[in-house]
Image 1 (cartoon, rainbow, N blue to C red):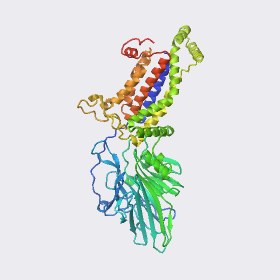
Image 2 (cartoon, rainbow, N blue to C red; image 1 turned 45 degrees about the horizontal axis):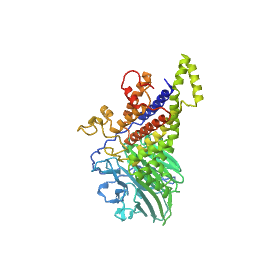
Image 3 (tube, helix red, strand yellow; image 1 turned 90 degrees about the horizontal axis):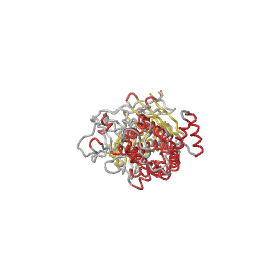
Image 4 (tube, rainbow, N blue to C red; image 1 turned 135 degrees about the vertical axis):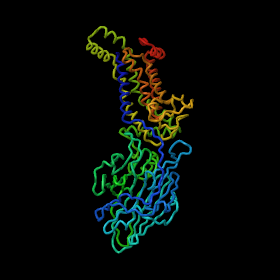
Length: 602
């Protein structure tokens, strides 16, 4: 076996091993549409666990008593912005109905919009609640909670230009006011005020909470974080939905919980693949961030508890906070970070282990897409750019391989002269490489650099919302999903349905892009004659098609990257080999691969 083939096999085997491990750890997900169960009316609404007021409080965290009136019987305040539609319930003042404009669930023309928040009584209830925890001599009924019915003081529709104001009087001298406003994207501002008209000071703790009933459907992929996302004084913490019930039990919280005291800046909430709901106290305001699981009601909950307030008789206290509820759009989140000082908000997007590579790759692809207007073409241009940046290293590698091919006659002479003395052959070969200044390992270097780039690009394609439902050309209408075509019905020419997802036949159903991937890898091999060793020859023969099936059900955008990468690599190698006096006999090598016996002569 010559050293060039050894290096080629090593590089190919390393790539194969990486892809195999990646495929096993992070299998591509088929996401079938979920049909929600029928909605049934409820006669009461169970409330989440309220936060316990701080040190001065005399009452523990307890569940608020449900009221008989259903939320459906009470008026709702409409939300209508360029990006959002929905409603706020006057029961608890909950933000519990939110649809994302511009984001249909599927590519179907009649597809409903993505629903981010849902009221209690709906499947997978998910909402945001603000309130006050009682302290000192106050009882739970003295402060507004999950079932408090608020009065609308002003505003009938929440828009970017028309805030709404709610009011509740406890009948014992405390008057609570809540003002909600929203911008033209996804940021709400919540102002809470309490007026003390009693003759004694009162102690209260303002809070906000995001409440999620039941474990939501997730992608079940280790590459993607879904669950709690929290920033606390510059430290990012992520807890998966699976990991929340496994947190250490905290007696004061009534179950598994993580409690973090934030001194200056931070935020906490829930993140999904493309969407996020996050509580953001004002910058510079200390607060306590809580993530917990309430087993009795199967509730996942995050809270932002602001400092305890003592309100003197005749005085008024106010606290402000913000709420992000929407799509994790890069430009939008970056603007909130840079312009509205939400600390490190861009890290709410899951950039992964290779964030130092993932972020630049995303930035470049994002700007190429803005310039070109087609995400598929942006990926092609991104690949060309990456190959150009790596070209000096690749050039050195290809030159080394070409020079090793030039040395093959001398190596054959060394082998004949040494006979069966393999140690002498190795010594003489190393001396020859040193004399001719050839590095036999140089051919593997590009592979090592491409591995983190592959991981980072896969991460970008998996988690960034810009690729969701992004079309390329023709049949490829969503680059974040596998190629929908299949050879089984001649790519749509035959009126045959495709195999059901999850079956063995579905695994063999490959689209046109994965087949092109296999072909480009196969052609790349044909730049060199097949190895003389039968085992090596078999490995090389099967490798492109194994890769084709392994990557066939990955996102189309990733397959497109590999097709472009293989094509450029083929062109680069062909030109460099010709410049060094070796004209690849591509058609001869192809013909030899279909013949039994010896491969084409070198």
